[in-house]
Length: 502
Ligand code: BES
Ligand code: MN
Ligand code: ZN
Image (tube, rainbow, N blue to C red; front, side, top):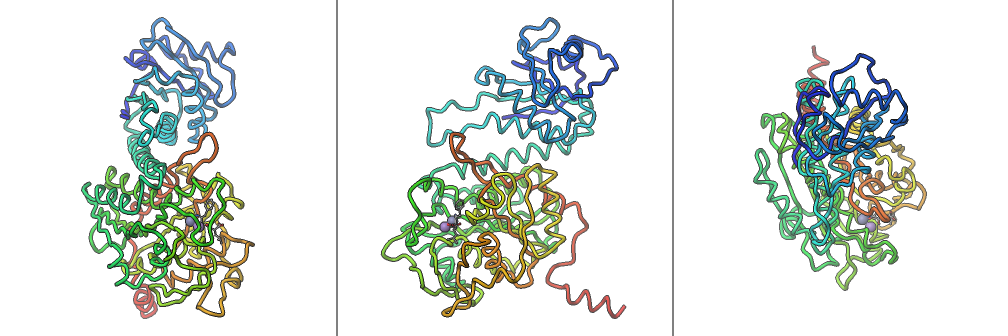
């Protein structure tokens, strides 16, 4: 799908050669009369009440004299904020018979400040027209091919428009891989997708297999992969947009391509949804696809430990003790708490990049779904600055998260008589105890954890990946790129000594 940004007055938008116009009408419609058929239609429909007030209310018109597109939908866009525009575009597109629409004019020219609106509109447009076809060739492919986004002043919103488009690229990449069933998205296939991304500008991909991972001593990661005939993959990606000496942000994505639970096997209902247990990995891949498009001035490392969690004669058993790459031993009390086992070794590996921050993204716990539902991802960090930056990025990208506590008392239940720790605590506070487990592997890394178990996909009739939290991650990286380059994380002590001497 192609998006094009243009400075167009309503009068100029009326002349667009497209199949349909979707016109966003704010509650506070300017009273200064604008010229042309579209402005007249809009202001009369609003003032006479045919276009009701109320976010998402629509009025559909056909063959309006003076407007070139045969279909015109007016839609109420409330106060014109990003979230209002997203709802309005979704409602407007729902009222259009999409198979008929190949070219759409999205008219934002009546909104006051369209910075948030442009990005929201572009993303809502992509969301509403997305269709998954890879293993369902009979599904109607996306009809919408071209969207002209009309704004009052294109140069004022160009950057927001570019960001919105890159978010679409990243979200759709993530959706594609997350939606693929596990037999069409094995660890090796994910690695191939990452290798392919590695051909894009500024990206390099390296893939480690079972031998290399064994040599690194990733005993926790290896223990999860044991029960499957699919070999594990450890994907390492580099996006280099800044000087080599600039400390990178490291993103770590959980890449369990199918989670049966292992010997602690899951019940049958909805187990198919465990193909989404690589949603964290998909979001890292999607973010790299977006970075390749935007080329921001920042360095980013992507780490994806990927394997299946299966039960068989070789599978790890409850009570088995394994040694992680950090040297800490783990008693695997529940083989279904596998995400933290693959992530802990990847987090240990992350330290070698002397990162400015490390963010892991994982469909980690059912408990997080209970805590926060499908609206906000769980955010865990002992570092207020990183937590605030991620929270802020989530708000501005409309991909929100919510900070959860990490008090040390939550780690009590992880104690084990047979290893340095167990891999589960009790049922209570399950998303927090999982985060406390991960924290034991982050020593003094500037680390944050996003539990996306509730936000990465939708269940039920609309079952499908959401592509979250690609918008949050990309926004965070763009915000980081705009900040002055930080002191390399490796040297905080030196820096403070110098500060004391001075
Ligand atoms: N992938 C699941 C988490 C999950 C479950 C996400 C349901 C979304 C929906 C994870 O590997 C898991 O099984 N976690 C267990 C942990 C428990 C054994 C401590 C869980 O949440 O039940
Ligand atoms: Mn599990
Ligand atoms: Zn899992």
